[in-house]
Image (cartoon, rainbow, N blue to C red; front, side, top):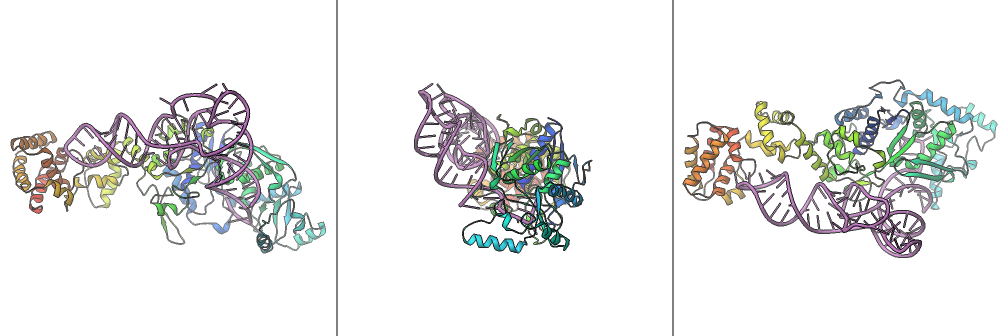
Length: 505
RNA sequence: GCUCCGUUCGUCUAGGGGUUAGGACGCCAGGUUUUCAUCCUGGUAGCAGGGGUUCAAAUCCCCUACGGAGUACCA
């Protein structure tokens, strides 16, 4: 293979959703694995759909995911500009070439005219297609006398330029994921290549740029599969070597029908976007994986395995291993229903892989938001104790809040089950014993408690849970003696006393 | 409607002529634990249907059904 060059080419019409991130990820993995280049090209040829902030959002999302670009608007490179709106002159030149060679033609039909035609045929349950069969009855440079076309052009009549689909040919190409795809040219229509506004449509801009930027592999979503034959024909019309194609399967909704869409997340309680997105027009906010407490590595890993597998039983892959293992040939053909539960599981896996230092840093941010200042070393110890019970970063609070704040309420169910008539009295005695522990350290605390329970011939579970209730407020959390050690002697005794006072039978 | 693509446990998937059809998530049960969670062990559940080809089909071919994508002067 010659030089591998791939590209991800979003249009800045809104936030990038996880399907787009996956497409970019597969491009990235493929490029990195083969020592190729990854290019970010902004396809902003539709001025009407431009959304402020979208481009920036895209860049920030990739930064968070750890997907880097070798060339692009920000990264620079020798094949720029990387924004299509800055390449108009280039497209004009190439559409001229197509016109000259007779592969494209001017069409003067107005959008209104075409709409009328579409509606008329729809009533007859037929579909209007601008193609080899209908084009001679429409108003274009193929059907009109030469002089009339020239006059219309001279008069400045608005026009579009359409591709002239060749008649009666078999178009076929090889897709790395799907194998040979064949389509007959008679089923293709004369797509608009150049719009009235003087800008190209996706089809033209895409082919010209991929050629000029020397893209070797076009890895994109399945939604492009139906227009791939047109693209192949375009390459042939230009007599350019075409890249290799790989069309990725779509990501489907977890339940119900259809592909995953913007609003599914809020409806079903999971994010669809990498980062939180606030729509500048409606003011609506869409949840992001980052804000929901996902680690980028987990998000990326989950996405990678949604439609691809390494053929081994390994599931947890840091980015480097993903790069090593990735193969386009092992991408599955069918659409994958997204499973939010599995996403959580991946997050849990990566949280365990993180060091206590890193986790403590992340947790410290949450603590600060709650106006809690704690020495980071202390937080590290706490994080180490509870990290195996945590799925998301914010779970650290639900799992460890009692290290920072005394319980304000006691779980009624636990009170009922574990706090008997004589419990208060026993706890009071226990406070006395514990106050005699000199070196406030888990082992000593545990010995003290055990000795007391044995001496009094009390029920172990009953007593321990009553103490836990006093310190934590419910029946959860790690080893009791460790909790006692970390909250400190005074606080521990105070909480026990407070419980005796507040829980009355 | 038309064109293209697809279909293995509920979900993500392995397997591509001879397999007890494997793994993971979820769910259930048991064990560990002073509690909860983790963890460990086990269980649950699948080749869309029908025709071929073959000694033999989840695997190859055809049809049907179902699902998905596309069908814009959007990408």
